[in-house]
Amino acid sequence: MKDIQEVFDEIQKLKKEKRDISREYKYLLDNNGSYQEITGEIKKLRDQKKKIEEANKSPRLDDLKSEIDALNEMASDIAISQLMNGQSIHIKDEYEIEYEPVYKVTFKKIK
Image 1 (cartoon, rainbow, N blue to C red):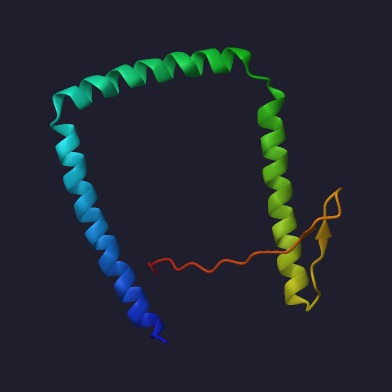
Image 2 (cartoon, rainbow, N blue to C red):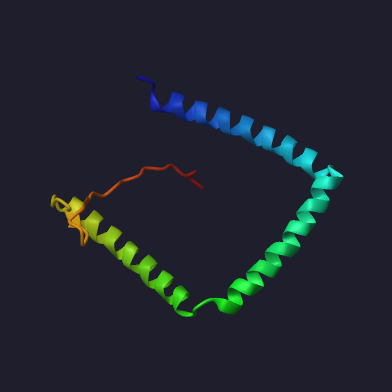
């Protein structure tokens, strides 16, 4: 099995290659006249679509989204607390389908 530093270095190398290719791709698109024209038309249509959606949107949707986000964060905090206390986590929905927590580890740059 590879060392974690080797894997990290490989990830960094691939990310750099991806950035370089993306930069080149964006440059090519920025200098393509028909692409720019189509992009402008798409932007106008998106704005029209957004206006129609906003005119017909229920104000309760934003409230529900906020409540769901807050409850998801609370559930996550409770699950981590239970895990740290050595307790198992069991959740079932209305159809008796069981759910298990998924933990994710990511790395961020130290400032």
